[in-house]
Image (tube, rainbow, N blue to C red):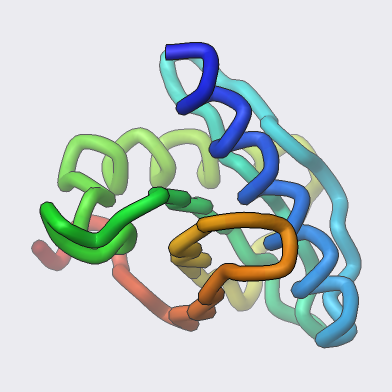
Length: 122
């Protein structure tokens, strides 16, 4: 379990660096609300982006992004509503997924899926 946790933390750091390199401004990491945790909250221009990072060492059981469950989407939507209210953000919002197949620091595949889901439509 400790190794999975470390791979997850490494994936979140890789995702943060990638998004910053793309011009995103990271507002929060591992933000918690009730039972929900949002890995990254960022601004992409005027859009407030809630990001789920999924990191796996293999895709033998499916791609990492396939593991963002409906339950996780609903929890993120609940947390997003609370965060938006707390900061007074009432315009564009987006839910992205950063999917990482991680073998080593020098050998990984990162995919950024913008608008990966919209809670409530599934």
